Image (cartoon, rainbow, N blue to C red; front, side, top):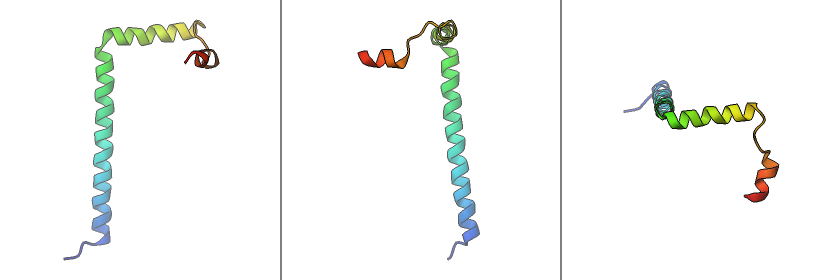
Length: 66
């Protein structure tokens, strides 16, 4: 029994679509996890506020101590 090239292409596309679906699902779950962690979310928001207010160090300053 021979599988046609069209059938092979369709199968490959289905596999690629399924992998893309799994990746999107994983990313969504990670986002939901972050949004459920109120302390972490608040920390991110404080960091954003600090950055906007100029309270940060440049990488060139930090990397000297790393």
